Image (cartoon, rainbow, N blue to C red; front, side):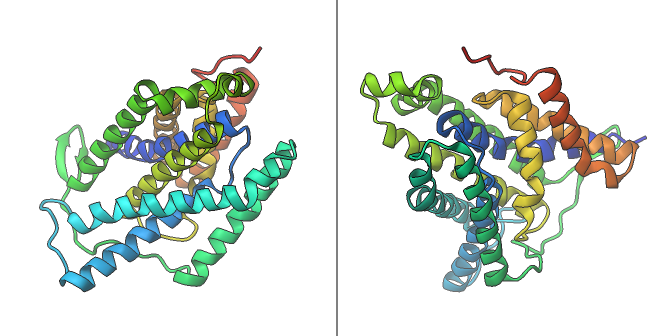
Length: 302
């Protein structure tokens, strides 16, 4: 029996966990489930695709950074993708979510996020069609690690990128003034207003951080798999399951839960069948809601 599924699960879990951070932050601070979050991943992936093409046209293409399949254009394009996804998230909040939040009915905001999700996804299909796209056609040779496990240079690079982003996110929330304000607002919005925290700035920072991480995860999916308008929708349930399993508001919990779900899905494919992969997240989500609704690192509100 090969243990390749363990590596596949870790890589999948890293992408799920990175996307789940945005969901858990949005829910803990803005108090609603954003079902358009997965589509921010897709928009980030396509923004990077367009940027890579534009850079290639302007400068005649750029050689990949061997042994990777991509080079400096994709690295720069990932930063642009984060900016594009952040701009979309801020625009959605200004045009739609903020106005509905003011009414004080969270269910209306949730339903609006469903509508925004469909609009963003359909617009992507209109602009780029539903055919899959790729950042590069370069082939990579997987290096053996032992025990039947093989890994490609791209996978190593993207795991390192995930670790760097999660570390930066942790430092931002725990060491920066804005990060501490975000945590304070999540714990007690009313008290945060009383002590003079700029709640509008906190909300903007929440959207920017969540959308940026979603875009980065989208680029990762595009590098390792493919780019499709439905790519965010495919990962939406696993990301929500990771956010709930890890505990709403817990960034380390979201990452750890993402790894758990990724490994569980990979194990299901290995031992049961690929058709059961999509059901794993649903089973885990239901089990957590029944047994421990606060998740692994969540706390009970008082």
